[in-house]
Length: 632
Image (cartoon, rainbow, N blue to C red; front, side):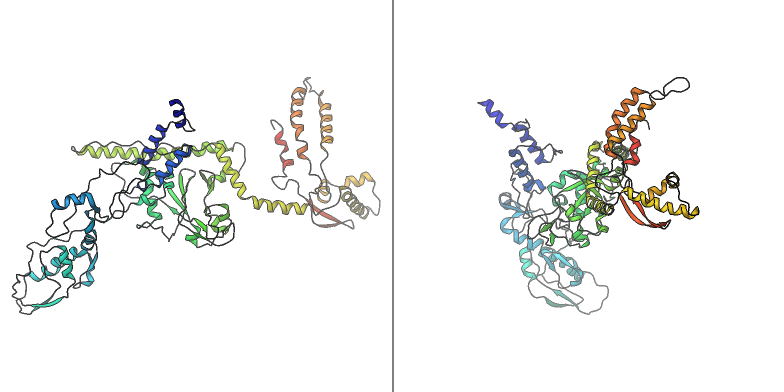
């Protein structure tokens, strides 16, 4: 029974449930990443990974907007019950930390602006005292302060300090100040209530005596600056971005795509974004040296180009950022391809990939050529690399190109690795000068990413050819239509040419009629090619003629008696090459000649013809048939 149970717990890939449970725990903690094709195939563990990706803790946020700890929704994250709760400032006058300690630990709410835990009942009061925006009526031009406490400290430091300062001039002129409220030790709450009272103008002479009702502090402390909220840029990126992007690229790419509030940037000025040249981290981190640039593709938001739905033809709108990111292989490095538009039809409710052929075909040529890559299922190849795949000269194969590009990539990786190791050595020298500093531990540099196989480069080349399929169809169709315009035979062309040459002969020889031999000798090969249409012989006829030629040379020898042709070798070559005879035949029922003009000769009008044989890559076999001969 236990054996059957253990067999049920095994996934399709042969891994146990305990193994996948440990993998899910490590994936939730961020210490494990799935490589391509290594995710579990079982539905049970697929759903578990989907729950982890949807869990709020997976985005890096530990608390919500009100400071409450977020509860794990997937069951694979560590418990946060042991998080320490710091004691907040005293909000109520006369209250002590001992009285509020227990209630804050049990019912406390953590403020996301200052990271202070206060009681839930006094959270609104805390916001008004410390974070509400207030304005001083006496100095409106100087800006605003935060909360009633900040306003109180501002008035004490700015207005009462100037009032109590020693006077330079002994003049008895009165000084008019604005006293907005009566200062007391009732705390922040009473101060906030006193702010709302009407301001009173008080005239104080040069020799002033401070009223006992006003308690002036001995030392005026400056207004404390409240801690600024730290923006978690990494949480803005979609979860699928983090599977492709390197951790060192998360923050700067998020800053290029999003506002500090988390909203997507609407104004985009350029397609290319590069890692910022900020100061290098100390001690050096390897990820900083292997960052990659980004290409942002957003034709709707960047150029305002309207796109239509390929299904219904209605206008589409962009619905945020495209959740998938591609890694593009360039000549010496890699870069990210990010879709800034996610076109969606309001009627069909169907999203469209921003770089699909349906979208690219709607762009004009100028904007379409700005798209830099040819895509496959997982990766993409830059168009500069695709250009080197097009020529098919001797030695230029996909395997040769793959090895050459991989060599360039390895040199670039070695250069960045050397730079990282040099900075590590320089940092160690600095640390050695400080005796109290501990020796840092450096991380290993990023490993080299090998390029895909040569077959993948052939797939990219095929996809590039398929993208020009409509253009090729148009060219082939127009050529085929021009060829079919002619409808005559070779005998008619030769007959007309003979009549024209006969007229020339009579005019140049005093009316003498030429014989058939003289007439054929006067016709040059160039005139035959220019005015007559010809077709190739049938395959059987050519095979018989070549066989007869070979039979006639078997016994030929030189002066020393050695045969000029080796019968065994030539028999083998002829058996291999005669299968190409059908390939060099003209297509049946197709005339390959096009009329380009007329020419008058001997009183006759002759047609000037152009042959379509060998005018394209599909019909140039005759010109390259010598390449089939070994050793040629």
